[in-house]
Length: 275
Ligand code: DGL
Image (cartoon, rainbow, N blue to C red; front, side):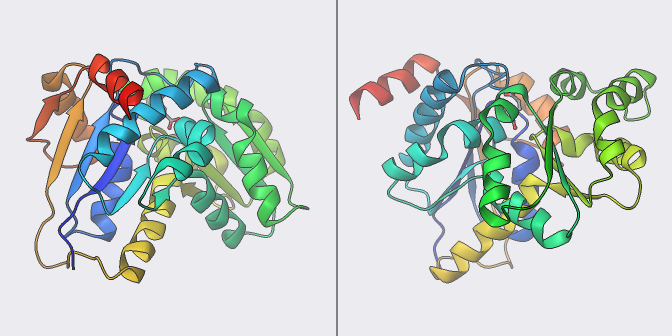
């Protein structure tokens, strides 16, 4: 048993959907979360910039001596998983490899992915699926408008949401994939609307849920689980406004966020330079 936290980071609030999955799978674990809200979105930036931010985020969390480090952000996973794995003294779990595996396990048919521009451009999902099954057809579609739509809190049956989704999902509907990976932290909040448009033959795979299963396995194998009888704590840090983070975070994380502290991006940059 260990009450050491699980460290989780994301470009902002979205990674709280992964925290929700982690608590759903391991209710007793303590979590320390960093949301880099001052520099969000990562999904439209160069992979080089995202890699630099991800290194800083990871180094901040490693100060808490976590048992596992979770890269909740798909874009950061795409840009930096190899680099992070090299520098981290603890296991690093990304969201791309576990969800690619879950999609392969779920179907023999083609696989679809929706994600940010940077994630699609990186080819990370395409590479992960090809490693597991080189002959599997895969189509990845960038959906840049979905992050701001979700952050704005539009209901899933809003006509604007339906219109944007119809446009992004057109080629995927034609392909009729057996599984569609929701390859961005924000998309689970649109799951209902996406499911309706894709139909019952397409299984939706949440990248956070797949990662949570992987984290649980690692924690169990290392004998460091914190038990399921007590409720784990959530301690959040944000590089921007803590009040706004706490207010909006509830929608993503599905629980009240009571502890949010501020950490400046200058502090993160210094950490990166000095370690
Ligand atoms: N967290 C990002 C991801 O999962 C989405 C938001 C952003 O672009 O930073 O790719």
